[in-house]
Length: 220
Image (tube, rainbow, N blue to C red; front, side, top):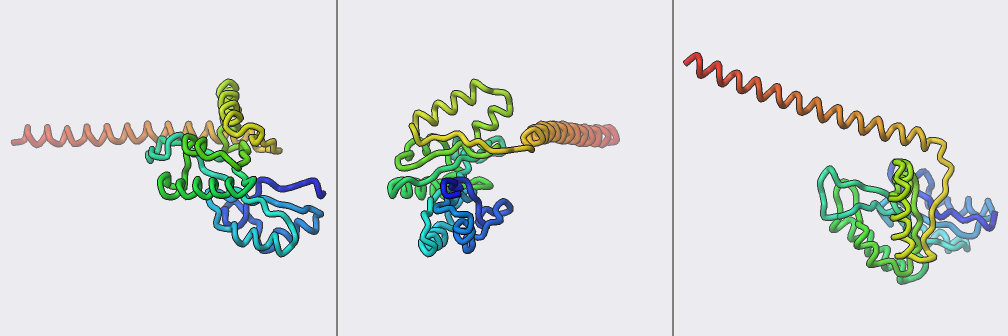
């Protein structure tokens, strides 16, 4: 399996998502006949040093990367702001510096529940980086799942223009894609139902207060 290289891989630093231990990762890759591996933890690069050191120890190539949390405007820190995923891999030292910058900005300026970067900032720091469209939580897959093919094409064209030959669309076997889409619709329906219930409760409370005031005035 020498021709196979993991380019989308989560370690124990992707909380609740990654089960791979950095310490034993490269030993396992060697067992499988692989000579390189990437790391793409969610929103952080905490494992980078340990990952690179273990790769060197095992005589393998370490590909540094990160699965960033993206948003349209990282200054928008309200519940309506959406967060999605995007994979970035370093080609060279310049790419490594750009990735460090983007991840740092996501924590310092864009943090809202998660460290978030926006597309405007990303498109200003693409040199030396390879971009992958990410999993079902990426913008491109989400648009396709929503049936917005034109929107997906527009987004892919924008990323292609920014990264050139270094932009790749990921293909994954997702048996749960339809279930995920269904679950998303159900979640939206639950959110709308909860909002209606909240408004109804608020209205009833206000009516109750108005009735109490009216009764008190009438009594006096």
